[in-house]
Length: 451
Image 1 (tube, helix red, strand yellow):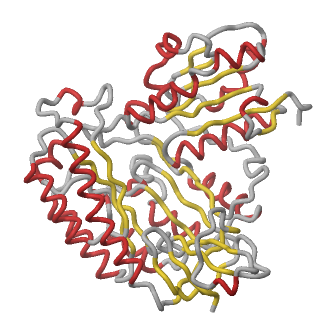
Image 2 (cartoon, helix red, strand yellow):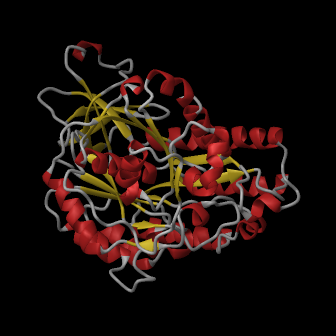
C-alpha cells in the first residue's frame, strides 16, 4: 500500500445503498494511502455522498458543502467532492451553488475517484463525471472490511430501476436495472464472513427482479447460495416491489433458515386511484393477496412498509383508504413521508398538488395510527423468547426495569424481525446469538433477559 497521504472525511446522506457506496469510496482511497477521520477539520479530502429522493435530503447536502469555502481558507490543499444521486442529477450545475467544490462524481463513477483526486492535486479544477456505465463496478478491493467492528453489513446486489414510478428519481440518477454477477456477490460475502460479519443485508431498488434481465441466478436461488456460507448466520434484504413478489421468494423466506422472518414491502398508498397515478403496477387487492400468501406460509412474519401521503390528486377519501389498509395489515412498522416533488419526474408536473399543511396533517394522523400497531406488535412479544444477534454495548442506555443488575453491561441486539432488544449481559461480545426472554415492550424497542 502507498505511504500515508492524509485523511478522508465521508458524510453520507440517505439510503442504505449510499452507506455501502461510502464504504467503497473509503476502501478505494485507503488503497492509495488515505485513512478515515471522524473529525471534519482534520480532513484532507471531504466527500459528501448525497441523496436526492426528497428535497430535504438534497438541501442538507448543499448546506453541508456550503461550508467548504471557509475550510479551504484554513487548508488550501483540501479537496472537496460531491458524490451520489444529487451529483448525478445536477452535474456541473452544482458549481453554481458551490463554486469552491472540486469534484462532482455521479453514481457510476466510483472506480474513477482516485484518478480525479490525482488530477486535482496536479492543478486541474472542477471535474464533473456523471457518465453512466452499462455494468456495475465489480472490482471490490480486498480491504473492504478495514477497521470493521460491525457484525451486520450491507451488500449491493443490483443497481438502478426499470419501474419508473412517477414520483421517483432513482431511474434517472441510478440508471436502468443492472444485476451484479452472483459469484462476485458470494465472494464479497465470504470475505465479510471471514472478517467477523454474521449478518448481511442485500440491497437493490427491487431485489425481487434480481437476475431476470441478465438471465442469471434468480433472487431466491441467490438467497439459497448465500445461506450455504457457514460464517453468515442471518440474511436480510431490501427493497422488494410488491408486483414482483413471487411464490419462490415467499417459500425462500419460509424454508431457508438463515433468511430473516421479516419483509419490507412498500405499498405507498391504499388507494387504487393513487397507485395508478404513481405507476406502481398493482392494486390494493393484489397487494393484500400477497400479504395473505405471506402470512399463510410464514405466520410469524414481521412486515414493514413505505407510504407516501399527500401525493397529487389524493383527496381525503384516498387518504382514508390508506389508513384502512394500515388497519387491515397491521404492519410492525412503516416509513411514512409527505410527498416531495423531484426534478425530472412525471408527478412534479401533475396538477392537483396538495398543500404542505394538508400533507403534514395527514402524515401526523397516519403516524399516530401506526404507533398503536407498533406498540401492539411489541407488546405481543412480552413473555416470548427471541433469538437476538448481539450488536454490542448500548450506546443510549435506557432506564431499566432491573436496577439491581445495573452493575452489568447493558447490551443491545436485534431479533430476526429487526426489533431492537436491550438486556444486561456479562462476557458477551458482538456477533453472539442469544435466546432472550422479552420482559418489557416500549414504543420502539424491547427489554429482555438472557435465558
